[in-house]
Image: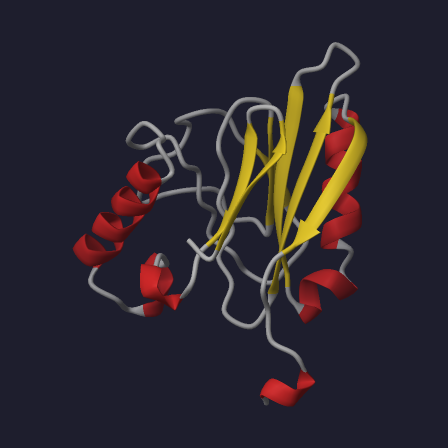
Length: 155
């Protein structure tokens, strides 16, 4: 882990480095190796096997609502953001910006979200749509953290 921090009681965010390896099935890597790396990441976070939810990201603005264990380790919704009331969420990036969001319902239940904020998705409003979806799920007091990404000097 490059960065691991408690955002609010019981809610943690973590950003990995390239040492974690490729976690994406869509880039032609050996699917067994990708599944093993996802399992290792899940375990290192202290989560039960198969609970960390990933998405198939497409540089759009679709926001999926997911539940704990809803998708298998090699699956996930086709979306660029996810919102959940009970599932740990993952977002993968290369040169895009990972956005981690956390809010709570009026009763204090967490509302979590992640967004894959690349240029096309940001232009299409993926972050705004993610916040709107969180509010629709009852979230108030939403906070966001931006993960590591590249800048213009990196190109």
